[in-house]
Length: 345
Length: 195
Image (cartoon, rainbow over all chains, first blue to last red; front, side, top):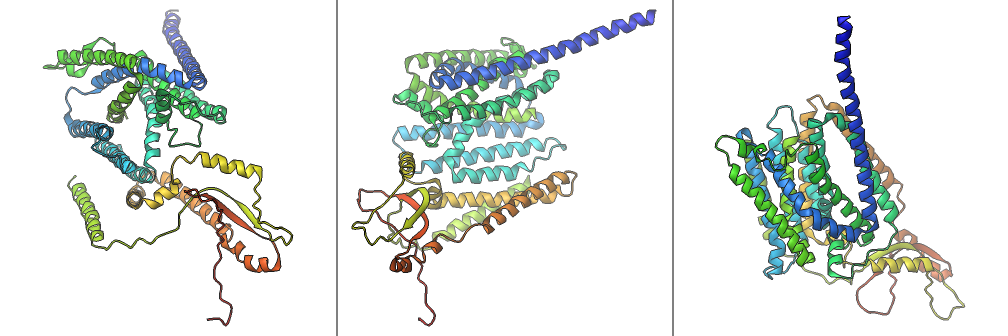
């Protein structure tokens, strides 16, 4: 009798937790599917308006969340990863400065913009070689990893980049938002493994939605980009590089991917606990360690909030100019994602 | 690490020496070439002699004309992508260099990985490459004769009053010249006994 009692006591909590996990995974999947469908619908319906609204509202906050995430993932002491982080930070700094210098020199009339595709191709090559170096350095940190195959891939991408530099840059614009989905995958694997299967199934929806958007909007006429702002948005989505594709498709697709990107960084990752409590500075290793810098970290985060507010103010005063500035400076966060993603793999 | 540095230095020296060597070669003389246009459409054309006609006529179907107009409207740049690549020697050289490096490193990876357990993946990659290679060969083998072959009989056909047909690239050339030019690819053929 006593044994029967024990069985019932031990069996029930397990069954309940399994049911709970299944339910939560289903709820998670349902939210993902509903959100993705809603975002695709909005992006296809009013691409320009949604683009303006989304960038205005979420661009700054998502960068702040990324900054906080990077601080959390930065080890208190680099140890064996010292060289890896040295190359990572040197690359982020150099490539960002070079990226900003190109339009700055052009607008300052120091450079005529001649050989612009060559300049872009050179920058893209440096980016790819930097990524290749990071991958090899990371693979050498563990004997289980043999990522030598990435070198031919990197060189092939370099070759393709030199054949069509502007198309390659456009590909970065479209691929970058998808990197957030990879971050989410790595964190689910660690923190919510019971949701991982549902997440992978939901990921199939992304190419299906993209195919649906291409099919539905492929025959629509291009968007009226008769004012400066709309023209900038269509150019950013690649309307001048792909003139035979309707700009409606390009802008819709870009907005959809951007919204997914913002959604992952602002909602999904904090929700599963990947970034810790937003105001908890002690979750950051650099602040928590003995002899750490809690005040400096807090100051950096508060300064980040100030920059977000400044960005909103800038958008309110001159949206087109601020959008240009933002997308130029934002290259830093695109670059910063690479080393931190590699650290997760 | 040391080996990598030595290897990279050697490669850079090699590239540097190549550039230096090319610096000593005299610049080729630029020969004036005819104005090149951008091909917007490939279609077929028939040259038909008509003894009763008083004026030469160029007949284009409405659908073809619309296609030409649509493609011409999409000409945002002066050159097509292929032309841009062909005319930018620096970029072509860089692309070739990186392609060479890609193939070389792929070879090293293949040699290394063939000694390890992931031979299945390597076998799959080789199989895939072979399939693509064979497909390419097959497609090439089935490609028709070059376009100029169809036009070889044009002079004789014109004499005989027969129709000649073949492929034609419709090109839009810069400028405001009102004359439409038809360039026919005729190769000089020597009759037996002629010198």
